[in-house]
Length: 361
Ligand code: F6P
View 1: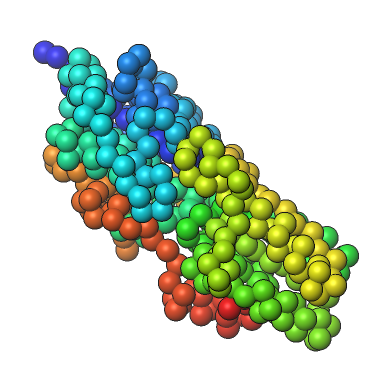
View 2: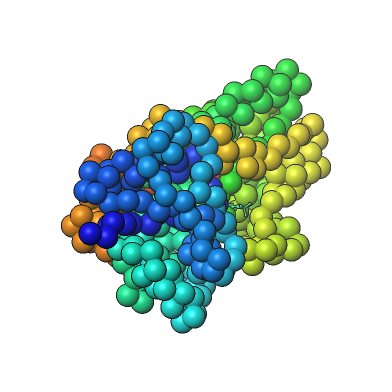
């Protein structure tokens, strides 16, 4: 009898917890006698020259605590489904044919696709083209609709909080304003949670456009009551009231505008308008690297087990989701319709405001 097989791949920007998913998928699938082929570098491994490795208990042992992905990943290449916010590109017929050929040649019944919004859009397009896929949501940005949380987010927040803890002491000693830039292209979840846990005084996010005068005013107000240092956390995609957001000039190899530079801009404006000495720090990919927190290892493991359960039930075209402390599933077509952003009137934002945090609005 032919060996039954499933494929697994990790696609898009890496994030802590991916290896926990790969390990759980492999172990859980083995119970039903499925062998797992791990495709390299996201969907690219499915195209010629096909690149994969057989995963088993031994090759996935001791990887849950490792950051990154043992399979490799990419957020560029031939499968990019979303180039700009909301702009969807359709996969070409020749790519779909090639994927089908690979799956037939290797006797693969279905693919477990671990990725963010763009990669899940690809998984859904493959499903709609007749290829059985199951989605597993990942991103440090926590911006995927239909799941209360994605793995990687907690690890990123812990990284931000650690940085803020360190920066507070130096800011206080020098009576400075510190501006910390964190990831979050369209969604301010990392800034919001990291800022609240790390004791930020001002949080600037894409969902709550800010005004410069309000930011300067918040700093002056603190000075007026004798507080000589201020901590500002700014999401890379923070929006000004007039619709401006700060990008680097080039779009890079992914076709998306590269964000970055907002912290330096805020620092320069603050220094100019308040006369306060100001420094800026960009946390960048430190937030994506390193070991996953226990919460992300657990969520990644539960998602991996959940994905195989969906395969058992034949629920192709679905994505595992975390809702009310339970692993559930939703059609991928629903999950990729829009991204999940911070609601400005949410409890979390209100709680921040009650703690005296300004959003510069
Ligand atoms: O999607 C996660 C994310 O961390 C975004 O917040 C950020 O803009 C992007 O990845 C950067 O990715 P890369 O440097 O890999 O292109």
